[in-house]
Image 1: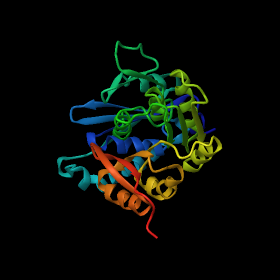
Image 2: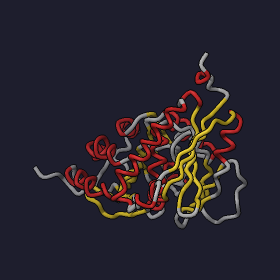
Image 3: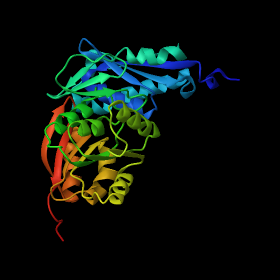
Length: 317
């Protein structure tokens, strides 16, 4: 029997050293490849991003293809990110096998409590809670995307603390580990309808909700995307929702989300879109305007941006 089939004994620990402003792109790449845990730490002006995959997911030769993929990622973004290709290698990737019992410990050692914005503290579920006056989100992301370390997630969290969420109904499209949904509830929201195409996100969101004392009826989550969110809210006669959060790559926002977004919104509905490269913001805004939305504000972090949006009114005939 080939060694690669023995998935229960070994895990690949894959480490990438990259410029700080490529960190989130590396995260997204690992997420798309099916990482079962991703963490990062700072090293001088660079970031060390580490991801974990079951042994059966990759053969050693596959990582050479991953190296090429990451270098292509740098090449396509170099103009936008002001990365100086002439200074030498912009990414360095390495990999090795570790034992089953070591992979979770290896991933978790990178995590520390993290303050986000002016109100929130994200505390790993396996660490003792530090003294704080902030609102505390206890988080164990498992294998789902969303630890709060990503610039895209932080932009959404910082936007949420500026909204008046008390008693509001919110849609979370692409909920990941449930971080935005749960924080909205901790800030006073009444009801969340959430969905993610990754079944692992469904499990992680439910688990993190329980850790934070969220009731099942407060946070309804399904595997899927905007159509599932619409169906859940319609069933409860909860349309239009008061707020929308969507932290997904811009191609998905433009292709799948924006065309149907008005189905859950009213004239007073606010929205926050993130996962958008600043270089693609004009393209996203163009599609928003064409579908009856307006951008009311933007925030930036590294190469990413978030957009505050609202319906502009009836589309012209």
